Structure formats: C-alpha cells, structure tokens
Length: 184
Image (cartoon, rainbow, N blue to C red; front, top):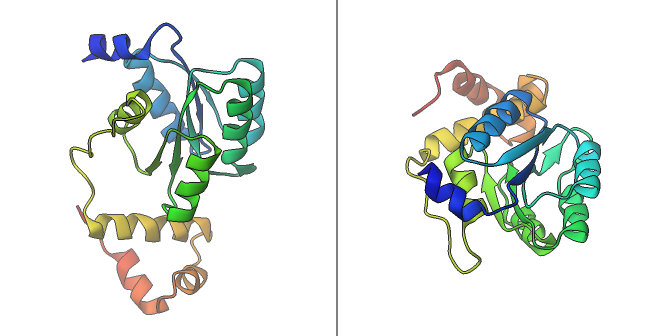
C-alpha cells in the first residue's frame, strides 16, 4: 500500500497539518509520514498562514475551528500562493453550510472528525472526478451523537447546564448520557 500511495503522491510530498488538538495533530503527522508525506504540523491559524505563505505545500489538512480563528483563512492564503494544492478541511462540527463554504474557497474535500489517516489520505489523493471510498468502519449514529455531545460539553468547560442549553436538551437527560459509557 505504501508504494502505491507514494506513486500517487508524486514528487512534492509536502503536507501542512493545522489543528489545535495537539495529540490528534501529532498522531496524524506520524501516520501521514508513514504513508510517504513530509508533514509540517502547526496548531494555529497564524502559524498555518505563515507556512502557507513561506513554503506553500502540495497538500494540506486543516481543521475548521481553531483557537485563534477559522481554518478557512489558511485555505484562502494557500489557494492564493499555490492554486494546485489539495486541501482537506476537517471539523468536529459537520454542517452543510460549512462544507459548502470550504469547497467554495477551494478545499478539495471536507471530512468530519474523528477521521483517521486512511480517510485523510484517500481524500487527499482522490482525483477530482473520483470520490474517496466510504470509511471501512463508520461510526454508529449513537456514537456520532455521543461524540458531538462530548465535544460541546468540553467546549462549554464541562458545564452541564450550559451544554444542555446549547444542545436544547434537558439537563438531567444530559447528565444521564454523560454518566454512561460511549456507544460503539
């Protein structure tokens, strides 16, 4: 698999990864390096823009929401500097509006988190007229719901009342969900 992936990547193997989730960023960078890419991993919009300006990569994986701004700003800078770059936007907030905005700005594909390295590689290397294959082991609907609730809970600084308000759910219902183990 690595040899066929290397052939698809081509001469320029540069890959920019922008994500503020540091453990995920490190894991993805290592996995992409094993697949033949030469990753440069950064955690902020500012750092992503700096890399995109100074050394525009052939490939990029950019998180949509970062602590210091919107990942689409990095996509715009990269598109200006290197129009042929293949860009995949990742997000924990899958919504049609943001997917459309990402593609309009120039993203090649849009993946919801958690996406694994195989999903990212398939999206980066898919030709324009070819869609990447669906994930081998997609999450169940219950797991997707649980992941979304956990993400909102963390973004609300683990405040149950605020999380329940934002999710439009009763606080006790949320407490019961949070007390259970994650579904498979």
